[in-house]
Length: 92
Image 1 (tube, rainbow, N blue to C red):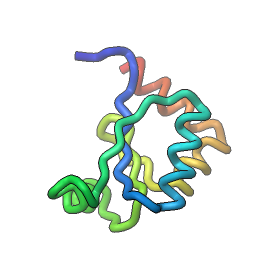
Image 2: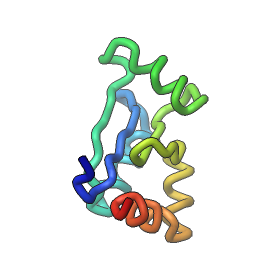
Image 3: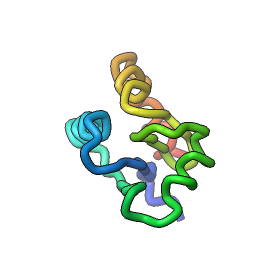
Image 4: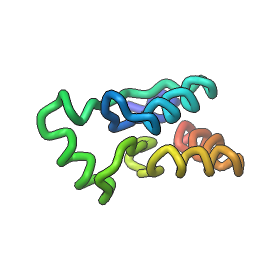
């Protein structure tokens, strides 16, 4: 069911500065997201690595599209592309 809003998922871990910065960026933009703690949820780290091909956190997805980590989404936001991705996904 399409709710009209993209589903944003962030794999993260406690104490991660880049995770904190990613949360702040998403919250500042009013983007709701679901966070998966890779240290607290069994299998979450392996799932993140399989989906993203990366071992570092955070890893952020919009629906099934991997956007990358904080530096990646911050760069997308700086170029105005993050809003376009979210809008295009919401309209799908």
